[in-house]
Length: 78
Image (cartoon, rainbow, N blue to C red; front, side, top):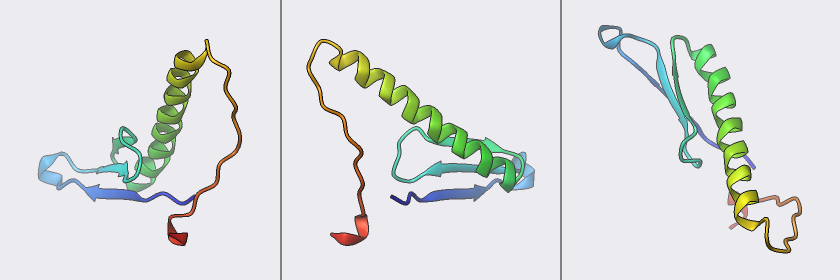
């Protein structure tokens, strides 16, 4: 699966730097001073969102029998 990172430059008169988000994952966003810092922090933000989501789901289903398995997806193969 390939996700889309969006980077928006903040004008210097507004403090400079970049804001970024993962288009397909609500809540995966960040703001940093340089594009390189923003890229690195966006990866951490995505990891954090996925970790929290896993914890929430685990709590919701802990009293139920569940099956988990790897799941691959390609949006290109519609």
